[in-house]
Amino acid sequence: MVALYGLAWFVLRETGAGRHIYAVGNNAEATRLVGIPTQRVLLGVYVAAGVLYGIASLLSVARTGVGDPNAGQTENLDAITAVVLGGTSLFGGRGIVLGSLIGVLIVGVFRNGLTLMGVSSIYQVLVTGVLVILAVAADQLSRRGAR
Image 1 (cartoon, rainbow, N blue to C red):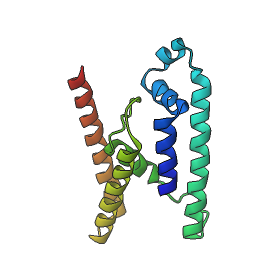
Image 2: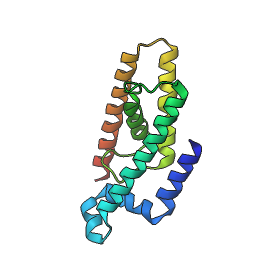
Image 3: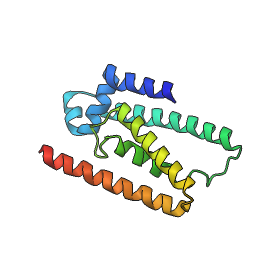
């Protein structure tokens, strides 16, 4: 995991392709007008995401020993919560990999604490959803303040 975070940090921060990804996320039309092939950048991002999803699913199956299609239904909510808590904007163009790592640690500790306290999984999802709403609201307020 640390190696993947390091690789993502290097690619996004130190390469032209990473700068193009941030540019397309910030304003796809302006990026297209500058001459960056936005469709190719988006395709590359989706392919990379698919590869990482495949690695994550293989790790999940290796850990649980079961290839249940219903397993991990709330992990997408946890991932979104972690990324938004880490400072990445849902509206694109802003965010750092280290912030996402910190968000993952926060969500992991939070979910583990709720499990240790004996909170039902339904309420854990509810609390995670409330965290997403609060993080998005904070992001919107910071965007309004920046204008």
